[in-house]
Image 1: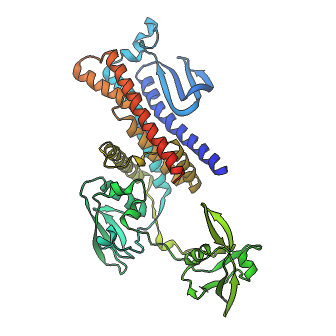
Image 2 (image 1 turned 180 degrees about the vertical axis):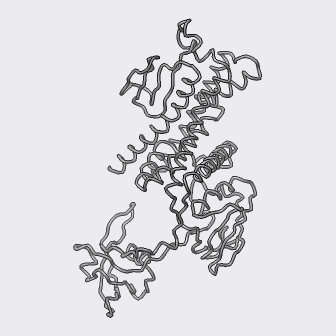
Image 3 (image 1 turned 45 degrees about the vertical axis):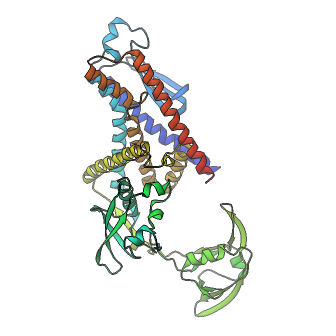
Length: 455
């Protein structure tokens, strides 16, 4: 219940920030260009809070449905306008003024993403070095010559300091037909090597799953020694005589290489007796432990109530930190926003042509889950989530679909070449088409959300 409440709270917080920035773009540019703003609303439906401010008596509203917002401007097409204020109506403005006001919303989404990435890069991004773990045979990674211990340095000449960098570049490359990706690595001995990945057809196999898993690239995970830090007083480990400081040597004669192997062994044996050999100081002791049973993700697993002793510096060799000065971070943030915008647009285009699965579209439930998880993971992760969603909203709003900002810009482009505005009938037809397209998109997104709940 706490997780659900947390997800909903951070979803509303993130959405509120994104909508406020988007609508403030329209609001700010309209005011600067002399257009009168009647209402600035975050959300739709019944107002939960409102106030009137300024010489224009602009109404500021927070409404009940937080799935969008709007800026209502003085407009002769919506209501009668006082002749003394007609010059401030939106519909009588020059084409350039109307374009600037409409385009400002998506532009402010991109500016928010740049600001978020700037702060991220100033704080510093901690990631995992892209060191390759075990390579399974018959995978694309195996065919490309990858070996355990390879550290990926560059993908198609793009530097990759972390696994996140690797995934983003490979995801971009997977959108190219018949893409043979060149990967520069340092092998386990430190020698520079070249590997390849045949990315053709990967998007069809991906279906919203894990890209690295699809390619057969498993990150190398640091091994934690199988040393006990503490035991629960009422757990199976304490009942068997295991104490803090014991090192698990073997289980039923099988040598335990690390804590992960020991945990997997215990989880697979709920209620079954295990002969455990432990090292305690200079002694080797043998004892029997019977894991208790508990449910984990609809699976019954074994549990003994023992915590691992994690060395303070055990993961240092796998950790990579990207940090820039405030001045450097500006350029890096702008490049990052551009790259993510292009990737988002390419994904959308490939969905239209059936080259990328529609299962990649997320709805409000999935976004809420991501919001909660990212917030619990820390400020940098939440800012990253905020930047990605802001970019997605910016790109989506620029699509030439009536009802969206991009649809209005399409009408203005036609007006520019035609020499006069589209007829009201043509614009109404476009609006109906826009409603239908957005409804279809929402149905797909909600279907994916529901399917993921039962996945």
